Image (cartoon, rainbow, N blue to C red; front, side, top):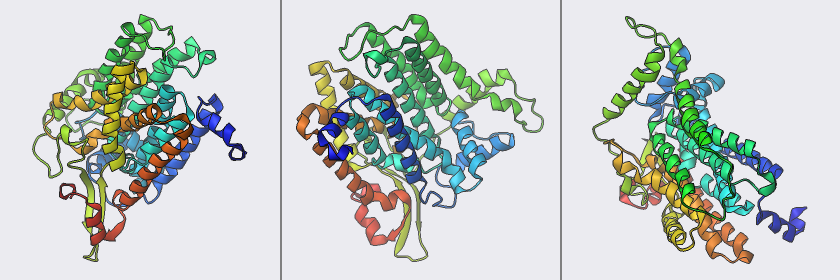
Length: 441
């Protein structure tokens, strides 16, 4: 019916949608991308890349035996274990929860875009662009903790923004806004409980909200949060949710000769084991890279590669960004940076601030071994910078067309690289055609 009335359809796209529309759209995005990510997810049939660390750890959680993976906190591994419990100890089960959290990442990006840009078109554009940025697809189909951590961060960002930016003045409800801020704190705590890198955006939350004391943005209505709300939501609840994820260790059977685990182990000994595990990650890897290489995709990483029985054909899975989203995103991110100083735009500030925190913190993180997929959380923000760029420079009458053209081009590139994102069996000549640069091999 809407397509028979183009003007009404455009009015809905260009405005902030109603609550029911947001819920329906979020549900459709979640179901669609879950089904899309699940297609052929059992390839490869063997453990893939870091699944060699996390699937055995998930099995140990399920059997309540001593866990050998102390390099990272337990929550993401517990979620992988939940997927194995639900689906079975098979390739689909290993990767099932990554698919769920990958789809939640799409929904979270949609909600972030709605909060920042206040129109349905930008929300849909950012969600779909995130779905075809290549890396989201690859990460949603492998049993790794980074997928879960990134999803929790995105959802925490979304809840925090909606706490400060209600849908409209009539929907402003102090009680509901405080619960959203609480939810944001719980999610950020679970993100830290998945991988300690999330401590960086956790700390940045305090810096970010500190800006509200010094800047006044027209996009932000007067909020009703007090000092206690910030302490409860952004300190107490994250810490509680973090340590709650260690409670299953109380039921774990330690190695012979060890005493049962207790609260002291949860609060102190396990934290030292994680820190010690991080310090022990040294050495080299053929696909390691440095943070300044990630935005330009100088050194992507292969999760899986093998020659088939036919020597002229190969199977591979490469974590490689969509060139339009990644390289074009650098241009749009620089525009957001410039436009923020010109117009003091809150969306411009949030986009640049969040991207900078997620990327430029890596030079200060004491870790010798790093990989391209560490860029995944920062790369998600590129979809927002694209939306900001298009909204700022496109005449309103051409907004739909311009967004559609950019999304179409990104989708074409996504399916162009799809054989090496999904592990399809392809000819060696096709493989070489997809490798634009020698450093990609």
